[in-house]
Length: 334
Image (cartoon, rainbow, N blue to C red):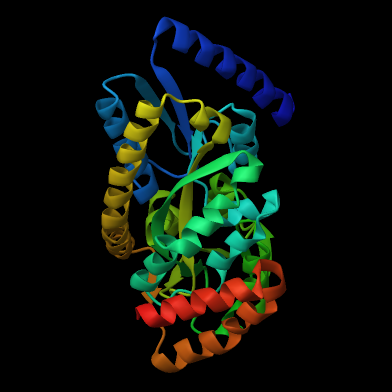
């Protein structure tokens, strides 16, 4: 059965269920689907939101969390949300470009965020709010930005300088910016769903990938990658989103309680993101299967020389004014 037919059928069931829930005063069900493991920052925050939402609404809302692509893969989940088959997602920010909101790919630009302080200046300020508002015409309401940290590179060969990437097949999520990034390094970018990455690395379909340490460790990618480079070249974050029609149709008091739950879950998520990444990196090191390398200052300069021009290259896609605005905002935050 095609995904559209399947989710349309599920949406009809969900819509009927919502109407029955309202009349019978049964709990309002929120299906929260995501593609990562439960013991990642996003996975743990989703569980925290569930607990808070059910507590603050005194049982009027029931949150069902589906991790690890149990319901939908990367390319399917946004369509499922728009059709109402699920009510809540936390996709990576690059996922919105295929919907026509290409500005979100600004988060994929190499070295656009020098540190977390600069990042939060963007996501928690008017720039971040303005980006979320661009999702409204797509039937999506943005609730919060969640953090997963800066990315490291991995492969089965050492990756010390850009020339080491030449000819490698590197997995990326679907993003024109990430495609340009890998091509700038001399690699061949390969778009794969997150749930397929481990097997692709194991079988040699791809040679390497990029991820924050927590994603790499919880998906056991370190078991099939001999080398990791602490490049910290790019950022991976998420937006927690809901189906707009569903959200707008909630009782005002319930919506307020869910906003409170999301606010508290977001604070929790940001607090644990760096801790989880640090712990994952330590666990990768202790597993003894992967060599972890930190580039020298000279090597870091080579990376920046090759990758920073991607910002200018992608200006026509994500918006030159947006890049300029973010660079100004982050410069003042350092």
